Image (spheres, rainbow over the protein chains, first blue to last red):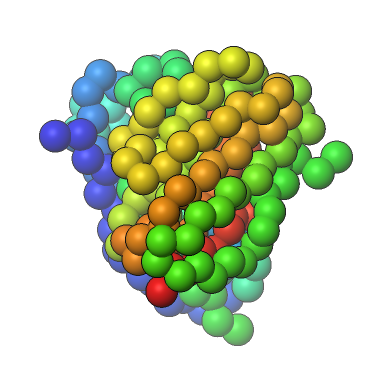
Length: 113
Length: 111
């Protein structure tokens, strides 16, 4: 069964600290993996995309890694800010087409001052 | 440049009532999608339209119908709402390259 599992479900950190979110997937075939950020009451916004051959991708303070052999990805947030408080969703695509996406349930991150 | 616009933002229906959720995008994208998001579950695809004039079922199409009115607009209709359709509905568009651009959702409650 094609699945995307994220951990932890929720996380609380202090402003300025780093954190890492995990994503494990059992999706086949594999085309690419994306991380989305979803603020409360808003739609998800794409942070990064990685294909099979890429093992790291950065977007400002966000760095995503991908290990296609173990089918694991992580999203590392450096020097967290209050605005990082959101849900982070891992999405795996089975093909280039956008109709074959498998969504994780997300990690809810809260950053406190 | 508004991106993807959804209306209404909130809606409360009684069981059996019908309604149409509206979605419009101004990015000239070919593909449009309707998802639902429920607590503890990942986003699930209801219907999609790969191009103007075509629509296809997603993972959870039962109880819904869609219309791709033109390249910009893609509507979702609930003919006879049920409490199981209480959810947050997201419309998205894409160039077809795997990158989705989402609207801010419609929060629907069916009592």
